[in-house]
Amino acid sequence: MRYPRITAIILSIAAAGATLAVGATKPAHVKPAPAVEAPVDPAYMWDLSDLYASSDSWTVEHDRVKAVTDTLDKYKGTLGKSAKDMLTALDAISAVQRADTRLAAYAGLKADEDVRIAVNQERQQLAASLQTQLGEKTAWVTPEILTVGADKVHKFEKDNPELAHRFDFYLDNVLRNAPHTLSTETEGVLASAGDILSQPNAIYSVLANAEAPFPTVKLADGTTVTINQGSYSKYRQSANRADRKKVFDAFWGMWKKYEGTLGATLTTQVMGEVFNARVRHFPNSLAAAVFADNMPEAVYRQLVAQANAGLPTMYRYLKLRKKLLGITDNLAYYDIYPTMFKLNEPLRFTVADSERIGLDVTAAYGPEYVAKLSQGFSGRWMDVLPRTGKAGGAYMQGAAYDVHPFLHLNHNYDYEALSTFVHEWGHGVHTLLTHDAQPFEKSNYSTFTAETASITNEMLLNDYMVAHAKNDAEKLYYLGEALELMRATFFRQTMFAQFQLAIHEEVEQGRALSGKRMSELYCGLLKKYHGDAQGVMTIDSAYCDEWEFIPHFYYGFYVWQYATSMAGAAAFADAIEHEGQPARERFIALLKAGGSDYPYEIYKKAGLDMASPDPYKALLARMDRTMDQIDALEAKAH
Image (cartoon, rainbow, N blue to C red; front, side, top):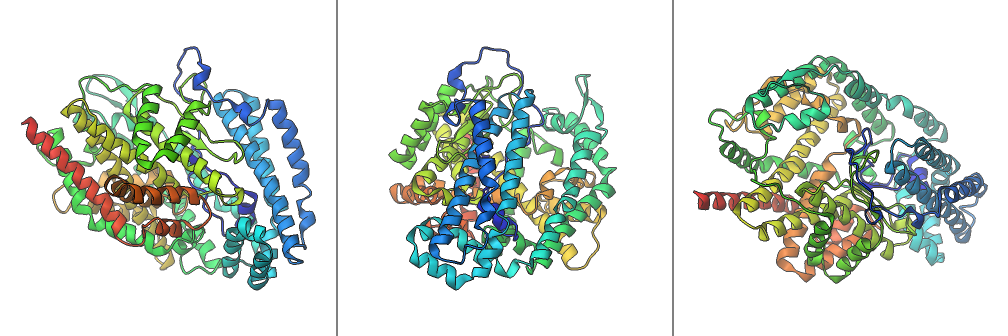
C-alpha cells in the first residue's frame, strides 16, 4: 500500500472539487505490531536522518515552512499578469509544498516507530495542521487560473518552457474543472459542509470499532472466544467446518441488529455523494468520482461487465474449493476462507531470503529496475521487523521527493510476508523511477498505476515460486495463494463496486434506500457471484448483511481501483513473461511516467486500454491457467 503525498497544488484543485488521484491511503494504526522482545538490529531499521538530522532539526524546518506558508497569499492577483509571474507564484507554492511533504513524511514515519510515544504523535498533528494552512493559503489559486482562462494559460505555456514543463499537467487539470467549479460563495458553503458530510463514516467507525457488543462462541475444542473484527478474520479460516458456521452465525447475527442504523448512515453517505455530483453539474455520482483521474466511466462499467462475464471461472474456483476441502454437501459462504492446501512444515523466508528472491523475480524487468532495487536494499530505507510498540501494517512512504522512499513492514518470515515485501518494493522502485524521470510537480502517481506496479511483482513472484518449488505440495500451496488473491481482489472487489453503483443509482433514480433494501441488493449480488442459482454455493440470507461490515463503502467509489489494477498487472505479467524486452520497456515507461499524465492515458501508452475487455480477460485466463496447473498436479498425485 502506497502512502501518498497530499500536495498544496492538489489542495488548491480540491477547493474546486477536482482533486488529483493520490492513491491508497496510509492504513489506520489502531493496534501496534505484535510484541517481539528482541534486540533491534539497526540494519533492519530505517535511518530517518536522511530526512532530518534530528527531531530538533525537523522543528526548525517546520517553523520556517510555516512562516513562508503564511506569505503565499501575497501572490494572489498575479497569475494573469505574465507567464513569468504565473511561474513565480506556482514555483513558490511548489517549493513550500515540497518542503511540507518532507516534513509530513518524517512525522508519520517517526510516529510509527513506536505508537506509544506521545511527542511523536503530536508531531503528526503539527504536520497535518501545516497542510491545512497550506490549503487555506492557496485556496485562491484554482479560481484565479480559471479567471485567467484557457487561451491565456496556453499562451503563457508557449511563452515559458519551464512553466509548461513543470505545470502543464496541473494547469490542464484546473482548466478542465471549469464546468464543475461554482461561485466563490457556493464553494465556501460546500467546503463548510465537509465536516457534516463526513459524519456517516464517523458514526460507522464508532459503532464498528468501539460500541458494537461482539458475540462469543464456544468452539469445538472447548474454548470460548469473542468474535470481533480481528478474531472473525482468524476463526473464519478454521479447519473445523462447524466452528466456521458458528463464527459466521454469531458475527453476522450481531450485525443484523444494526441493519436499520447502518442502512441510514450509508444512505446518508450516498446522498452526500449524489448531492455533490449534482451541485457540481456531473451527470451522476460515478462520473463525479472518476473525474479526478479523468478516467472514463467505461472503465468502471467494463470491469463490472467482464467480472460478470467471467463468473464461470469464479464458479470453477468454488467447485475446486469444495473438492479440495472434502465437502460432500452444499458449499456454504463460510467455506470461502480456509486454506485449500496445507504444508507439513511451514515455509520460512528471512529478510535476506526476501531480498534475494525479490532481485531474482524483478530481473524480468531488466538491469535498470534491479539496480534501483539493489540501491534500496543497500541503504537503511526500511523498518522491516515487528517489535513492541511499532505500528502494524505495511506501506511505502514516498513523499520526500529529494530523499528516497521508506518502507514500513512487519516481516514475520512466512510467504505472505515475502509477497508483501515484494509488493511494497514495487511501490518503492516505482517512486525511484518516477523521481528520476519527472519534476516534483509530476511525481505523484495515481493509485491505478501504483497498484498495477506492485501487483505485477506479486504475480511474477508467484510464478517464480511455483517454478522453484521443492515439491508438488509447495507448488500447490503457491497456486492456491494465487487463486485466493485473484478471487478476493478481482471478483470480491468488483462485487463491492457493483453494489456501490447499485445503491447510488437507487438514490439517483428517486427510489427509497434503506438497510433492508441494501441487504436485498447485496444478497442478489452475493448469490450471483457465488453461483447460488447454479448450485455452486448456497448463500444463506443471514449473511446478506455483510455490506454493513465494509468500511470502504464510506470512502466513495474506491475499491474498484484494486480490481482494475490487478487486471492491468495480469496483462503486464503475461506480456513480460512471453514478449520479453518490448513488454518490459512498456512497463518501465509506465513507471517513469509517474503523474505526468492521466492514468488511463499512461496505460494506453503502455499498450493497455482499460476500457476494453482485454486486460480483464488476461486476468481470467491467468486464473484458469492456475486451476489447470492445480488439476494436473492433483491428477498426478492420485
